[in-house]
Image 1 (tube, rainbow, N blue to C red):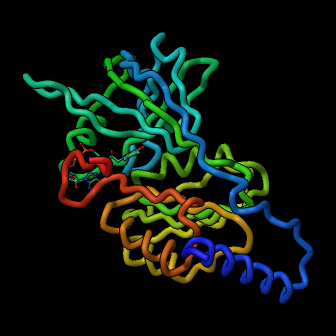
Image 2 (image 1 turned 180 degrees about the vertical axis):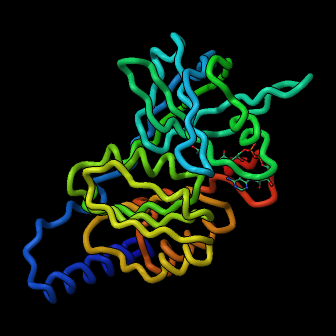
Length: 271
Ligand SMILES: Cc1cc2nc3c(=O)[nH]c(=O)nc-3n(C[C@H](O)[C@H](O)[C@H](O)COP(=O)(O)OP(=O)(O)OC[C@H]3O[C@@H](n4cnc5c(N)ncnc54)[C@H](O)[C@@H]3O)c2cc1C
């Protein structure tokens, strides 16, 4: 039996023990291989759009609504898709940064992006100055990693940069789906009410130590579930060790990504 099979067997034994202890009658979860991430490729297209409106949902965020004919065939199949936003530079080529399509309405072509504001970021500074009527270029998504939405439970672990993806997940999640959110946010004013039909248990924490401590305290629920995370790079490395190695959650039912890295501009996990 390889390492993965041992972990799966251990999880199945834990689930059986839990069920026996509680006396609960549950629908047996599907076998481990039943759900998997589906990869979808899209042609990369650069889209020229206009800022239709600018909102400030909370002190640390600016939400930009983009419109334009170029968005007609915009593809966005997953809550954690990303696009490249071109940030103009005086006398130089635009730089590009990754952002989540927070909402896309295929009927109207409305695309919303939420920027988490931070000190010393070219994209963050630029976004904070955008006004209705400004022209913007975006490219992608070049693909989607479509995570099945029928897992019995999810953990979503993030920070301000992934709050847009977490918010979108919760809006799209089926009714009653069990979701635990652990999100780091430095300013209490940036906590938000999620619009969701899911059964969401939300933990707001103020720093990454607290985030890791909170996840450490959580017990993996019984049955198949998905652990998703998008956050600072050093913290996500520790989170992977905790969730996948210490807690033994199967890697194929997880996606834990670095969304940015302390001290590095234009960080990309893929190099
Ligand atoms: C798949 C994906 C989706 C993403 N979606 C979003 C999204 O929807 N909204 C969003 O706001 N961000 C999102 N991000 C994160 C965003 O791409 C980075 O934060 C990016 O570095 C910001 O660019 P910048 O030009 O402002 O800062 P950079 O020029 O890249 O960095 C300058 C300095 O700021 C630091 N820094 C970068 N980001 C932060 C931060 N958030 N907080 C504190 N310090 C920071 C860097 O370490 C560096 O020292 C996403 C990232 C990925 C990979």
